[in-house]
Length: 441
Image 1 (cartoon, one colour):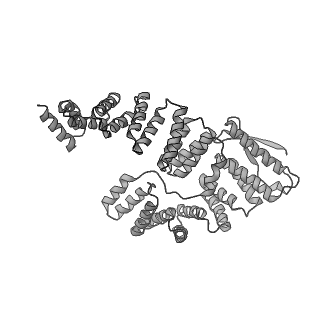
Image 2 (cartoon, helix red, strand yellow):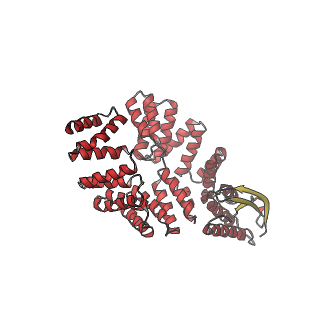
Image 3 (tube, one colour):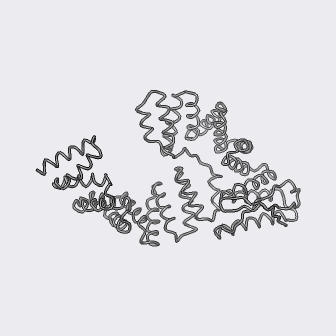
């Protein structure tokens, strides 16, 4: 099949998109859109090969003697899915549109195209495609949740409420539906309903720290300032999340470790730990000799409670790079979490020796010595921390407490005076200073 360059270029995640048009082939392909093929010059070799193979497969399918509509739809759709995985949206969109035109009965292409439009902020087009997806799969919850969010964004409160309420009837544990109804109730001034739904969403997803700001607003409006202040202190950036299998599977075919790491970090930022683990694990499979990727995977596995698997990744990371302070520190923290303070101390000290300015290694080593009741060593460790970071107030406070415990009040006076100067309202510091001055007379 002949490929013609249109002579334009567009910037995308990987670099330039050279728009190449596929010439008409059998089976009435005159309605098909031109397919933007990305330039692979600056891509990772594995990714470049993967995208070139996808282009060749699409072109071979188009050039076939009598390609069927389902075969063409599959070729366009899968190519679009690959582009979508690498965030090449300008290339993915026409692939999905061609797949939709060739096979309007396939739910996947309608849903993914709707999701793509929603990502780009084209909400009208997103609603059109997601409605088509809903007609094909009326009970699919991710589709309905996205439609509810689009109705909410458009200010169609009644329609949005109906969507979220119907989802709750079928799936009472849907934090996203409670979240939607909570925001709608808050918008309408129904504080009792807002608090009921938002508190339930938080119970279902306690890591969704964005909920705290909404709860703070609702409690403030309900004239309950203490609860408002409590939630205001807990507010964060982690959103309410819901399972979305088609979107989650987009990255399954990605062969770029850096891309998977970026996706993993984004999922981690959003509190989607399972997705973060999957992306980091695939990145490890692609680059097994990269200790930094293994550290990322290990850190996320700790958050999911998979301590054994995390330990294995950190052991391997240290074998690959024995001089990595971050790997030693992470392993020390994991061992301490498992109650193995003696082993943790070894790795904290190693991390501190490799990087004397590490923000936590020396401090954690000192705190571990304190737990082990090795008080003189703990005192020296806190002193070393202060040599590197003289303004570390917590280290100074702990060192002072140790000096007082060891009946060395005179040595604590100078640090206590500084602590009182910095925090004159701190009753503990003031009492400690008075006691130290009296003991040193």
